Length: 406
Image (cartoon, rainbow, N blue to C red; front, side, top):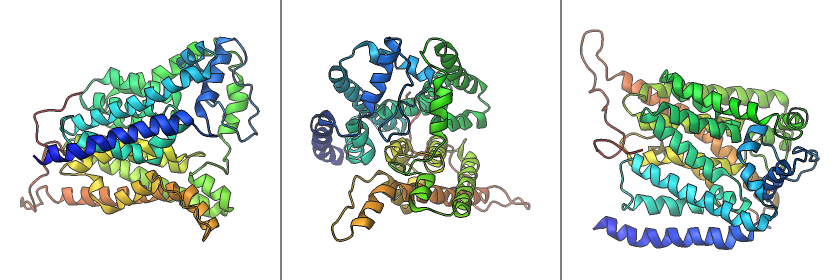
């Protein structure tokens, strides 16, 4: 009965928000237009014009994908009519986001008829990440679906499929490369080999086919190594914007990197007892580390936290802690803080709350997993054979069910 009542509220809310984001915001677009940048580059590929012919010292959105990704995205260049294909690309990403949320709903052993599914859609489409992914018309919705597919395949032992999916994601966004740590922990060499072979193979095939492919190394790679001081929520972007002393930035970077490494390693203690929590939380920690500690971190990347957030409905979850939710809310919040009463502070909060959110998440994850690992270690027999507490459950962290589908 309660589920029916929640569904009566959740589904209309979800549908209205999806419609508003798609028809009102995304269709209208904004000054920031990621899609035209990508579509124009793939069009140059089709027309056999050098792909990387942009002026990279301007602040306009630039085409930064490698030749392998260019080959993969080449169908976008089959038409020169950007206005015709852009709405379909936005719709594809919206569908991918909803499908990813549905898949995660099933992975935590809730049915698609439960309120969790429409509630997750409504909450997701409120966030800055989903809203700006659709408004800016970028590919992050598809990448979220790829992340969920990778985690699902990996947990179900479909190694080649997991490697293929993460390999395709790495081609488009190399920020997914650290997620090969997950099969490494499982000694799943098939997934690792496929995850490396797919981007390497696509680039090997694409290099002689993409006009001006060498410009990627001479123009784009040096540009990627620079830290820009606009639309950059990474620690490096924060440091450049505020003129942080180099020693302070390096110290913060090292401390946060150590916390990411500690959390990723300590989470291995949950690999067998809580596999879904282990996989999703480790992925969230590693990706958050990339967002914060690389040269470029953009707020809408925070969408990749969604899989870990789904574990909140289960018995064990990082998202049972208020600090985890604080970090997620800072990173995902759609709020604008501009105010005539505090114009400068409002601008800083709008630009850098994701930076604070990612830092809070890393510190909170390291603290939580350290405490969890220590607590679990006390459940094993002591030297005199006594047990301090029962061992952790070997069932999933979510509703008790015989299995979860992929």
